[in-house]
Length: 398
Image (tube, rainbow, N blue to C red; front, side, top):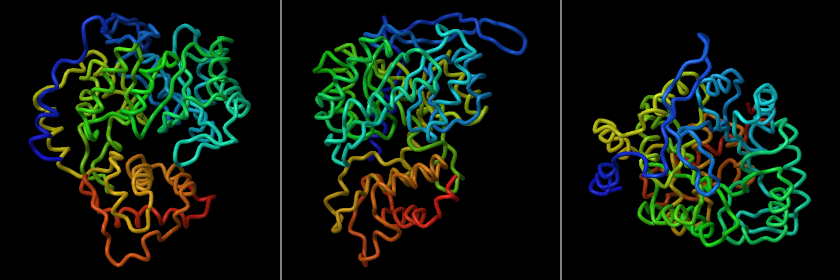
């Protein structure tokens, strides 16, 4: 990323929010000293009409019920999870909390990964309504609710999947039966194309998209966000920290996480960010953003400095693919690296590497790496580093 592009990207960002989409509320929040009023910024999630906190809870890696309850007690009442997170334990943890809370006091969004979808993002004969509905019913049971507020197809990268009749049928049925209020999908790759596909259909209510200060082809992405927002699609930003709270594997270069989240929220077409929180200091930092998500000049400078570092987030620009003589799925391998060293989640990395089937030494036949990364990654080194995980016995993977 050139310095001129970096400066234009960050210094143009001003006030967060847009007229008609922002609401400050003096919400009553619960604490050890009783209820107290706290100023919280909400935005309307597109045509759903839901008012959600601009910083909500990405629960994917959280395993502390106390942390989730503390977020709820302090006004963060929107929770994002998925059927597959922590082998279902993520939803189960939330369900044990939800059963104690008034149903109208929180919102939950979960995601189902359709069976049989290939690496090309296309459905197969295994991608059936029955399989999708079975997974959803398991999620509903774990969450201990009668309905979810938002149900998403998990990790969509090909617009053709959105036209797959068995999935469309299953989602339409669940919405008609009021087991979900709204439907949509999440997307990690081809985000601009997927947002445009959502905008061109009247079926979708919500899109959760990867969006951060390292987003490649930013102008294209912002245009797609604008088009989707104008069509009434509610947009939630994920991966806002661009790979985790540190810039390096050794965790010696901490990020300004508040600046990263504020950057995503400075786009008025984004209703909320769902950063992952696994510790109380993460929550404490994010709570401050609920009342003041505006980037300061110092934070803009921090973003400029962070953008000069390679970091651990692959933007999936896919420019590397043509230069690998063995056609390795380099962006997916870089995502596994991010899971392992950015998120400190060996299981997610292990499972992704298993799906890819690239083995322990995928680069063994290359004397010299010809892959050029636009982000400055030493691709061969990162692939060798993360691929070692494949050799770890399954029972030792946390």
